[in-house]
Amino acid sequence: MKPKKLTLALALGGLLIGSLALAQTKPEETEVWKPVPPVVAPAREIGGAPSDAIVLFDGRDLAQWVSTQDKSPAAWRVEDGVLTVDKTRGNIETKRSFRDYQLHLEWRIPADITGTGQARGNSGVFLASTGPGDHGYELQIVDSHDNATYVNGQAASLYKQHPPLANASRKPGEWQIYDVIWRAPVFGADGALVSPATVTALHNGVLVQDNATLSGETVYIGKPAYKAHGPAPIKLQAHGDPSAPISFRNIWVRELAPRS
Image 1 (spheres, rainbow, N blue to C red):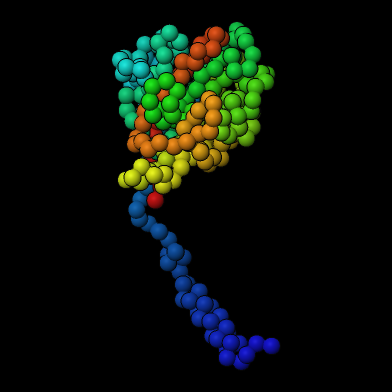
Image 2 (cartoon, rainbow, N blue to C red):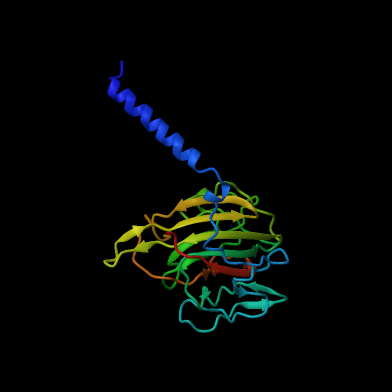
């Protein structure tokens, strides 16, 4: 049995909460009018860029890209609106560096691809390039339509860390779409990790990474780890496997404010 004083206090508390709820009698009292969200005009066509996007490749040239190795002008092949990997020229990356962003990218495995496993149209988009070679955080690109490989290395995996939630791969020869939300890692003044990187990604409209937390930069052998860095370029990989090179089109990015 509750003491009388406690019972009275609970009753008075309930009356107070009820009276506060009754005091808000107008819908306007819970309406928020400011700040007003910015206006962003969506693209008029599928794959097009919204009005506030930075277009990284529009089918015409590689003006927004450089060689990862020496920062010279990127020299992959551009023909008929399509960018094709040149494996002899190495990786390319954006001239600009980014922190948090939304990325749209379309890629295609050659219709006549040969090979198996990882040697079948292998490439990748590094969501933050932290150095030459394969330094950074990789979202895997490879033919996974009918091609068995380790699941944390198939298409739409965060390589060697998170398998995709689904295999949404189309056949070789068909265009594939990645839409990615990248939240960069945050480091303190002493270089210590404050918050890890996270990735949300859709592959051909299917959710494949749901706010996945990365344990560090991508590594082929061993365990991932973080090293402090600031905003970084986006990198496309010229993988050394012997299969035919893949192609890209319609690449754009929207910079996002850091999470509060």
